[in-house]
Image (cartoon, rainbow, N blue to C red; front, side, top):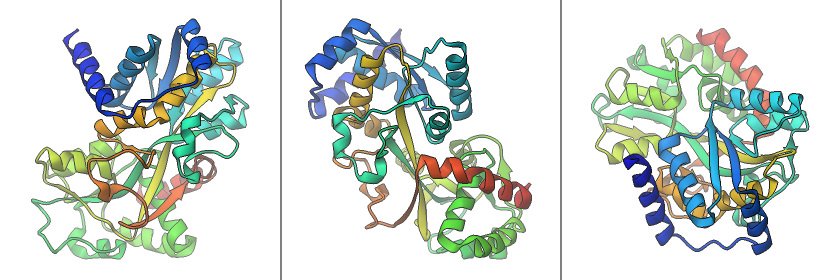
Length: 341
């Protein structure tokens, strides 16, 4: 109960400092009559899902029931429900979920008014998804192990023998894992040059670690490795703020992956789903993402470190849409496993 109370207090504090968000009154009334929204989410529960849910419940009196799972499990669950004719999911999110479900005609087309605040790459022109937050990926180092001034300045610097056996990457089949790094190199260097580079990098005995990029960063911070490839920048910033020996490196071009949210086709609480989606994308909802150390998609929301925003002023960025990830990830994953496993 104490944990739940602390979440509610945190959400209330965020809401008191965030811009007021006013949804369409008729939508609010219809959503309140439904009384509940069911959210299948890939996000971290204590860090984001709990405070978002508490804030929405406090504002509207509508219960948020959530299921936490990885992207592939979310897809499987939605497909199984639709096949059985018993859809339970209203809203789902993730970096790769929506394209798979689009192919199966299991996504409702609808964009909230709050999506007007977002840049064009952050929303689907057909209305099937809208970005809630961004994952900006760069390498990160342990500053206790890497002396100032000796950091790599380019990907080619990682081929220096001094890095042999000192680097790690997430082996997860995810754009935030090694396959995403492969895709970044292919898009920025071309397939032949990227493959040639990756063969040389594989010879550096890069550790392929199970688990997510956050877990790889934790091992870098613990001193197990000097450098993590394809780390989430806002994770590094949050760890650095807590005193950890972590620093991200703006090498060449960042990989930027969108975490998107969508409404399931035949959602049982369709109005509550729309209201919840609108809340997530509003400045008010996005402030909770920022407070939770996520990088919000809404450019009007303040972030703890403006240097992490991919506006092409701080660093160059390479974006992939959910549809691009769905089409290219199998190829990237195959190449990664051929060279590194």
